[in-house]
Amino acid sequence: MAAFEDRYYWSHDGLRLHFRDYAGPDDRPILLCIPGLTRNARDYEGVADRLAGRWRLWCLDLRGRGDSAYAKDPLTYAPLTYLRDVEALIAAEKPGKIAVIGTSLGGIIAMLMAGTLKQHLAGVLLNDIGPEIMEAGLERIRGYVGKMGPWPTWMHAAWALRDLNAAIYPHYSMDDWLRMAKRTCYLHSNGRIVPDYDPNLAVPFKLPNGSAGVDLWPAFDALAGLPVTVVRGETSDILSVETLDRMLARGPHVTGVTVPGVGHAPSLEEEDSRAAIDAFLARLLA
Image (cartoon, rainbow, N blue to C red):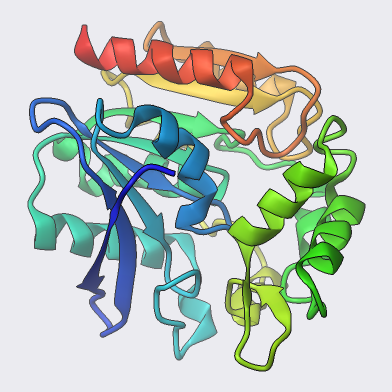
């Protein structure tokens, strides 16, 4: 596993937030990796193992995940608050240019960044997310967020993740499921394995438009002029083919790749995902 430094900063409402800092050259944009709803910085371990050293990566634990503090108010588990948290990171660290790799929720945050942080953006890669979200996928997510675990062993956690996600990753082996378990869960002090996020993440989903709360097409359109790559899982129930086509029609700055045989969301470790990332990074250096 690539070496990293654990680093922390403070949100506007006093939460201590964590990110992994993988070393890389200073003459390239930092790759800001923002995970999906129930994921954390460990979700990008495969990406970091391949790119660290050639690129500097900041892999975030959003509030309520991983080593970041849980929010006192669960209604702050919302995209506009996450955006403010990223703004706090940029204000604290004062980087030069950054390129965002955002999976699902992370991609929503990346689109919103075009409104307040575009001067820092070198490009955006959206992993299985767009300005319109399919209701079938939202219903699936509502069905499990905050309701998983606990489990007595890591294998029990891996089996549960396999049962939930077998259709999304049909080619996964048991080793893959165990790796997913160790990236998405942790050993609680009570000796049980539990998901590595605040169960109150589910609270905003009970509200109207709880998935985003804003019209994301203007946010996506604000990325004009930047390299934008959209990665879509072939069987995704979040990003439809029709929405991807509309995104690609926005202009030549948007490119798209469909990863065969996976759903929401590609791990970014598939061969086609790696090729899409490499092409995106080449565009940043062009």
